[in-house]
Amino acid sequence: MGKPDNDFDWLVQFPGLEGIEPHAKTLIHVSTRFIEAPIGTIGYSEGMPCNAYILRLAGKSRVYKLSASGREILLYRVSAGETCVLTTTCLLGNSNYPASTIVEEPIRDVIIPKAAFHQLMLESNVFRRFVMENYGALISDLIVLLDEVAFLSIDTRLAKLLLDFSNPTVSQTHQEIAAELGTAREVISRQLKRFEQKGWVVLGRGHIEIADRNGLESLANSG
Image (cartoon, rainbow, N blue to C red; front, side, top):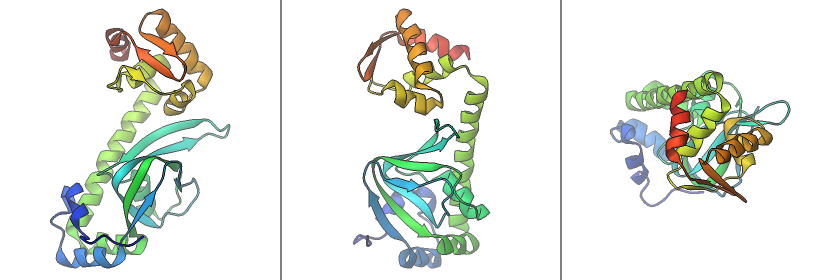
């Protein structure tokens, strides 16, 4: 896919790049391309080489890891105005992807090829600072996830997940929630049934009604 009429309008979504040096801006102009992908598109799979740096303009994708048994655990999501920490890791370390990603909302990305990325890292102080600051922030988010997986019980993590939804109706299946938390559907169904018995939620087909946020918050804060 080609470039839009106004090549650099997208920079406003990444404030750290607005003051990028003229020579770096020229390199971005001649080397980048824009791509779009619909829901369900596989962005990359575990073991694939990393060939480009990604700047997300619109949409959302899920980055996840599969166990040997096929169980999925969500690592993080990449939304508009963000970059992908695994992509940065693989480019800096010249390694293949250790996880996979799939599009959840139609995406539009700026793609900076691997060679141009490394040239920008060498020649542009602004670009290098932007990459490393974003990388550090995303690594911090992953550490929070590791802490939760290692130290919080599944019922506490489930309560926190439900509270993350602003709408009292959560339109996710038990399987989708299990994938988010890296556990089995049966475990989630059992925990949700306990929440329902406590009056915290009301279970429906393909959705969950949050009936008592205070009850969920008491459990979430206990961890």
